[in-house]
Length: 308
Ligand SMILES: Cc1cc2nc3c(=O)[nH]c(=O)nc-3n(C[C@H](O)[C@H](O)[C@H](O)COP(=O)(O)O)c2cc1C
Image 1 (tube, rainbow, N blue to C red):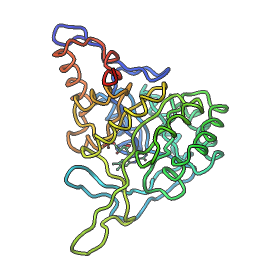
Image 2 (image 1 turned 120 degrees about the vertical axis):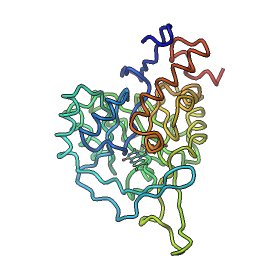
Image 3 (image 1 turned 60 degrees about the vertical axis):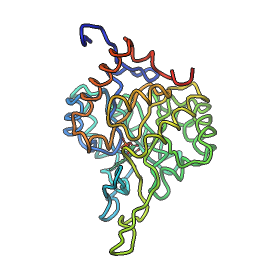
C-alpha cells in the first residue's frame, strides 16, 4: 500500500487468519444482517464479527436497553438475535460478498457451543468468536467466562470438533484475568479477544431508579480504553497466542496503543457512534500517518513493543 511515497504495510495476521488491515467490526454493532455488514466492510473494516448468535431466536430485554453517558455508552440489549438456523441466510450472503467473517456464538453448555459452532462452520464463517463475557446475560457470557475450568472444557471439546480457528472473547470483570488467559491457551484456542463491555449502572435522579430495564448493563466506548489496554498488556505478558484488542478505540492512536500492548489486531464498536461508519477507513489512514511519522513500515513490528 502506497502512502506518502513510502510502502506501509498495515496487514494483520491473527494465527492463520490474514486480513488487509487490523480493524475488525466488534460483535453487536451493525452486524445482524448481511447488508449492514457489507456497508461496514465497504467502509474499510478488515473483517467483521457477527452479532452473538444462540441456538434459538431471542427477543432481548425491554426498553430502555441503551443510554449514552458522558464518556461512553451503557447497554443491556439481552443478546437479541434470530437464532442460528435463521442466521444461515446472512452468512451465506456475507460469504457471497467475499467478506472475511468471524461468527460470534453464545451458549450455556458445551453441547450448545458445539451445536452452534458446527452450524457456523457449515454456513462458511472463517473463524469463531466465543462470547464468554457478556456482562448482563443470565446463564451465558460472563457467568460462563468467569470459571477457567469450565472455559477450558468447553474450548477443548470444541477444538476436537471444529476445524476453523476459535477466538475467545473475555471480560475485564474478573479477579484473575491471567488464570483465565492461561486456561484458554491450554485449551488450544487460537486467540483471545479482550475486552467485552464492563458491568455498570446509571441511575435516573428523577425516577430514582436505574435507567436500563435490566438495571445492570455493559459500559463501552472511550472510558473503557485504559482498562482494555491493561488487560491486553497483562494477557500478552503471560500467553503466546494472538490477542485481539477491543474497548474504546476511536482513532488510529488508540489502535496503535492496543498493538503496542500486545494486540495483533483490534475491534471497534462504539467508536462508530462517535465517528461514523467510515471510522475503519479513518483509523487505517491515521495508523499509516503515525507509522510514517515514526519510521515504521510494517504494523506487525509494533506488536507488543510496550513490553520491551
Ligand atoms: C449495543 C452493543 C451490543 C453489543 N453486543 C455484543 C454481542 O452481541 N456480543 C459480544 O461479544 N459483544 C457485544 N458488545 C460488546 C462489543 O463487542 C465490545 O466488546 C465493547 O462494546 C467494547 O468495545 P467498544 O468500546 O469499541 O464498543 C456489544 C456492545 C454494544 C455497545
